[in-house]
Amino acid sequence: MRLLFITSNRLGDAVLSTSVLRHYVETYPGIKVTVACGPVAAPIFEAVPNLDRIIEMPKQKRGGHWWKLWKSVVLTWWDVIVDLRGSATAYVLPGWKRVVLSGNDDSVHRVEQMARMIGVKTPLFPKIWLSPENRKRAKELLPTERGQSVLAFGPTANWSGKMWPVELFEQLIAQLTCADGLFPDAHLLVLGAPGEQDMAAPLINTIPENRRTVIFGSETLLTVQGCLENVDAYIGNDSGLMHMAAASGSFTLGLFGPSRPENYAPYGPDTAYVCTDSSYDDIVAAGVDWKSQKCLMTDLSVEKVVAAVGRRFGHKS
Image (cartoon, rainbow, N blue to C red):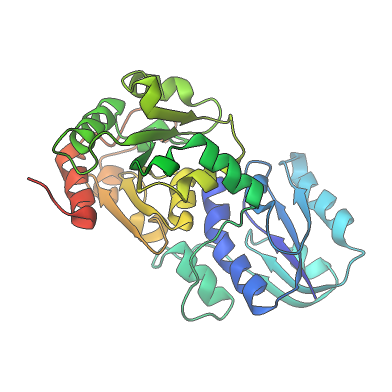
C-alpha cells in the first residue's frame, strides 16, 4: 500500500498536518509513505515509519514545482493521495483514492478541519517521529540526568508582529525561575529558526552560560523535537516551533495576538494559550500593515502568562 502525502511549505502547517499522516500510518501498518513538502518542513518527516522518500518542493516560477512533482511520481500507482495544498495534482496522478483539502474553514481548528476531510470524528494529535539518534543527541544537550527542571522558550517568529517583546520574556523567566518561583534555578532552552538568533540575543545574554542551551539552526529539527520531549514546559509565540512543542507532549503555552487561536492554537495532549487584551478582530479592525515589523503583542502582560503557567503547575503567590 502506497501513500503520497502532499503537505505545506510552512513548518507550523506541516506539523499540524502530521495528524493526518499519523492516521494513515497507524491505521495501515506497513504503508509506504512518500512526502512532498517545502524544504523548511522536510526535516520533520525524516523518521516517519516506512518512509519511502521525501520530495522537496521549493517554489518555482509558473508552478514549476508542481510539474516537477508530477514527473517524479506519475509512474507510481498510489493507493491514497492526500493533497493538503488543494492543487489539481492529485487528479492527474494514477491512484485509487484522492483526498484534497479545498480551502480553509475558519470556524474550526485546522487539525479538526483536516480530520473531517479524511472522515475522522476525533482528530489525532500531531506527531513527529524520532530516531534513537535524535533522542540520544537531545539528552546530550540538556541536563535531564540531574533531574533539573528545563523550561523552553520560543521568543521569535516569522513576523515581528507576532513576537511578544523580548524584555517581557526576560521578566517572565525571572518570575518563573526565582527562588520562590514555579521553577527555581531551571535550565533554560532558547529556540528559534536559523537567522533569528540576533532578535533573541538580548534575552539570551541575560542567561548565564551554564544555565542555558541555545539552538537556532545549529541542530536538526528532529534533535530539537527530542529536546522538546524532555522539557517541563514550552512558552512561545505562535510559530512552527510552538506546534512542534505541542506535538512533543510537553506542556505548551502559546502566546497569541494577531493570529487566530481558534484555528492555530497549539494542538496536543497538554496545551494552553493566552491572548493579548486586544482580540485578533480588534487588532485587525484597528488597521494592520502586514508588511510592517511593528509588534502587536505589547498588551499581553507577564502576569497573564505567569497565571496560565500557574494554572498548570500550581500557583505560588
